[in-house]
Length: 144
Image 1 (tube, rainbow, N blue to C red):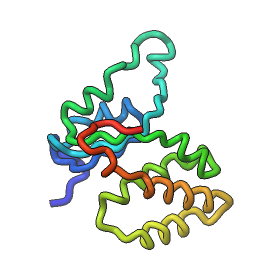
Image 2 (image 1 turned 30 degrees about the horizontal axis):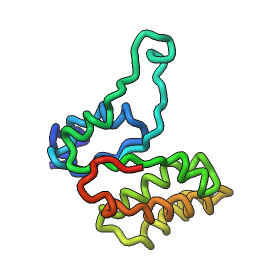
Image 3 (image 1 turned 90 degrees about the vertical axis):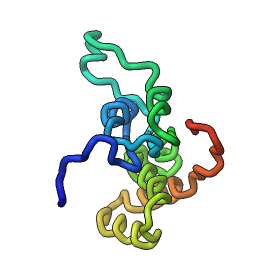
């Protein structure tokens, strides 16, 4: 039965564009699952105003549940690709290595969605993400 609600502990791979987002959705990850997280921190207004603090132990907390945590410097990758706005494509490239979808399908969809001046940067960013090699991590839980 299809449901838009994700059951706790049912997600194999958690993709997060920001560290606090990864922590927020961590309960949905299967124990031993994989977290792909952009290491960039975007401070919520409550942190900026001083009403709350940003947790310093996010990587450790992610590692307590996940079998593998891939911390990606998505902003650096995107800048290298030619556009800091392409962080999402870098992370998508990393994720694509874990899914049974051919590279040409990914590229075709990106080309269809970005028929503008950002197409080349998005394709380059996606490729940089695909070049990220999680197997080099060995038993490590974090990677930059």
